[in-house]
Length: 385
Image 1: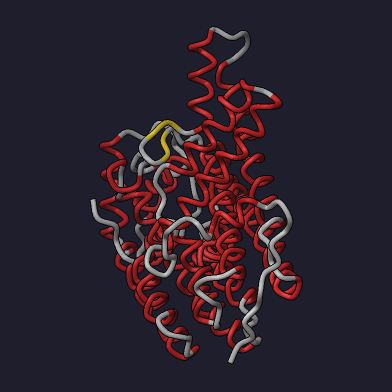
Image 2: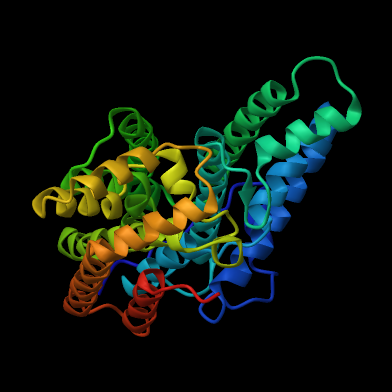
C-alpha cells in the first residue's frame, strides 16, 4: 500500500485552511474545488497588490484574474488530483488540502502560458474575449495615454504573464506539503516549468525555420503542451502520494501518450475550429506559421505524391498573417484531400489506446482508474460546437 503522507500547515496560511471549508468534494467536482480555491487565492493577492498600487491591482491583476477565472476545463488539476488519489492519496485532510493548492498553482502556470502564447502568436482572442495584450492596448487608447498603444499592450501583457508564474510558485511553496512530499515532488515541478518554456521556444523557432518533419513536430507538441497538460500533472500527484518508481513510470507513459493526443486534437481545432469551439479565430495556426504535425504530414504527403502545387500552396499559406477566409477554406480542403486529417485522427486514436492500456496496467486505487480513463478520452475527443 502506498505511503499516505501528511501535510504540514504553515502558521498563518489561511489559504490552506480555507480548502477545508469550501464545501466541495474534489472527488465529485475537481474543477469546482479548483475554481473556488483559485478565486480565493487571486482575491487575496489582489487585495495585497492594491496596498502597493490600486492601478496595478485594477489593470494587471484584473486582467490576469479574468484570464485565470474565465472558462477553462481545469484539466491539469484534474489529472494531478486523480494521480494523487490513484496512488493512495487521501480525499480529505491536510495532505489533500496541500495537493489541491499545488493543483491550483497549475492553473496559474496555464494563465502565464496563455498570455504569453497569445502575445507571441499575435492572437486577438482568448476564450471569446480580447487577448490580454489587446485588452491592454485598448485601455491605453481609451485613457488617451502617451506613446504607442500596441507597444504598451505587449509590455503590460509580459508583466501579467510573469505575475501569474510568480504567483504559481508562491502557491506551490506555501501549499503546506509535508517535507517528504515536498522533496519527492520538487524535481518534477522544476522540470515541468523549464520544459514548457523550452517547448514554447522550439515552437517559435520552428515558425522561423519552417520545420516540416512530422517527428520533430510531435516533439514540439510534446514539450510545448503535452508534458505539462497530462504527464507532469500525473507525475506530480503520484510523487506527492509516495508512489513507487514503477507506478510513476506507468503513469508517465500514459500521460505522455494522452498529452500528445491532446495537442494533436488542439492542432486540428486550430485549423477546423473557430470562436464557438475554441474561443479563438479559425486558422490562427496557419497564419502564425506553426509547425504542427498536421501541416508536416500534409507537406510530406504532397511531396510523396508529386503534388508540388499543393506543397507550394501550403507553404505560401503558412505564416500569412492576412490569409483570407476563402483561402483558409482551400487549405482545409488540401489538408483533408491529402489525407493529413485522417492521419492525425488515426494517430490520436493510437495514442489514446496506448494511454488507456498504460492506465489499466497501473492498477490504480479505485475510482481513479476510471476517472483518469474518462479524462484521457475527453482530452483526445473532438470538442462540440
